[in-house]
Image (cartoon, rainbow, N blue to C red):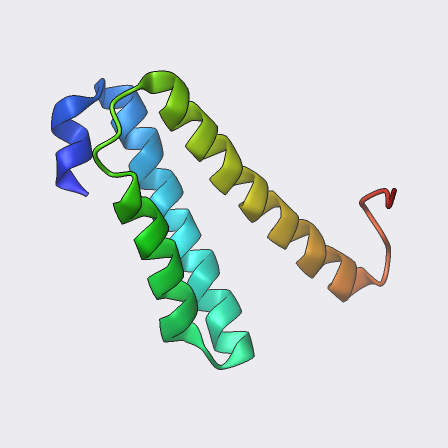
Length: 91
């Protein structure tokens, strides 16, 4: 995602790139377990590509927050599955 690095402050671009890489790692993990790696990884790539030219820091932060929430939700789900304990409150 080199275009992000040119239009954004370095610390923001670095965070986005790290988040993108972590999302791809999680997508590969999920895809491998569900036998649809290519589909899940492609979905992550499409989401990031759709917003790769965004320059508004507030919008970027909202997008990053959404991606981070997705990662956290997946980590909680996997932890609950492994331990049998429920970590999140159901409403």
